[in-house]
Image (cartoon, rainbow, N blue to C red):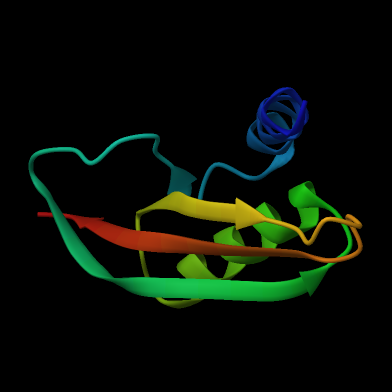
Amino acid sequence: MNVKRYCCLLLVSAITLPAFAASEIFSESAGMLKTGNVSVFGKSTADEAVLSLRNKAELAGADYFRVNRLTTPGDSSRWSANAVLYKNS
């Protein structure tokens, strides 16, 4: 269920965010340079966590980011997430 929710929220956020923001990718791509990692915690929804990762990626100057962890405790109270940052080579 969390995967379906995450995919729907991700689709909505991808459509509504400006084109100049860092773009999320779903697998490592050849020709991109890994530039770092970012993480967030204490977010109230999965969408908010991904949006926060996107903002951090943009502030870090990344062209792309890949979410490699999106989780919440068993009571679904607060979301945390990690992402890897990439730049075009």
